[in-house]
View 1 (cartoon, rainbow, N blue to C red):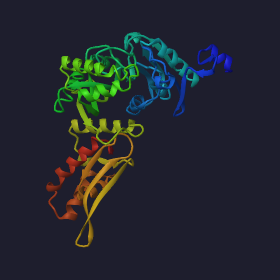
View 2 (cartoon, helix red, strand yellow):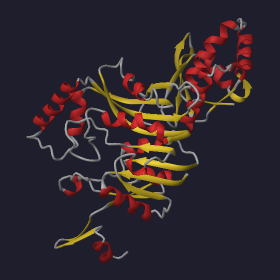
View 3 (cartoon, rainbow, N blue to C red):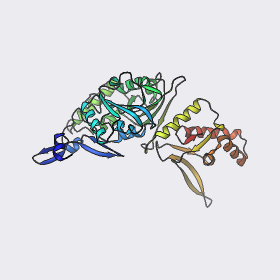
View 4 (cartoon, helix red, strand yellow):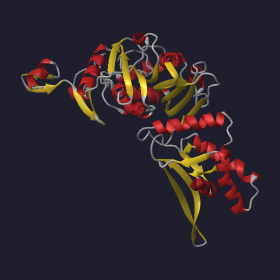
Length: 408
């Protein structure tokens, strides 16, 4: 396309001072993603239909999505279409929905820029445009910010508290095909650290899905409001105190004590009792795709819930880990003080292991059963087997539920 055509399309603006870009286009992996420039770049006010570009939130959702070959994918609140475009590489067909018509126009542009023909975009709120269709994979990066006013479509839900994410979670089970996965970023409110997971657990209770909720961060209301207001260029220094007071008054009125951010992963599984598992990650953001790790975690929870005899199973420690030893000097020699096993890819989980468990982990190479490894440990230590079994299984189960093992 030449300059004149790009001006006609509105991607460039020709004025007295020269030509400027109206659209930000950045590379993301093998894709190119168009979006709006942030107001800090243009100096213009952010409009209601502002279209966000590549940032930490969409990358986090991309990493927390299960990547399997599927027939159909739904991207709720598609925005610039980044989740739909990524899913197009492993989906026969992808549908993106959004109420923001301008976002859909940019998403359609992105599909054409990247030469993707298996993606469609439909305007409408959440599930409404797809009627009664069901999908193998659903992803959602909704406007989850808990705020007193719906200033921006990309950010504010316009519903009371975390009502939008609750409605999505309660409705998504009926939209998933059996065995299908759902991943969503969300904010939710609660009173304190003790009741952090209670309300989301209720949302998925009758969904027909197993649930894995990962809490990445928790804020008090002042921290939360200040963080979002600091990103809003429409809130100047003079208007900031009043805006902060309005947000805090809203939280007080709604009885909101704390606000958490994280990712919810669901898997449709009918015909049995569904499980709910929560996790906190205090070691940073995911590093790369968590898809295989999530599948390992679901397989591990299934095995434990089904009461499988793990002593008869073979565990293979994945390559995406490191074992750290902390040494101290004693009587002129170095002795191991503590040992930690850490994920190097995916969710950055950390587990503490003692010297004996380090030996057990070294034996989890995928060619011997857990029972055989425990037998050898018991024999070498000259300790009765029943004194070794339960401590070993306890640590192994904990590490299984963090995705350290493939179960064979």
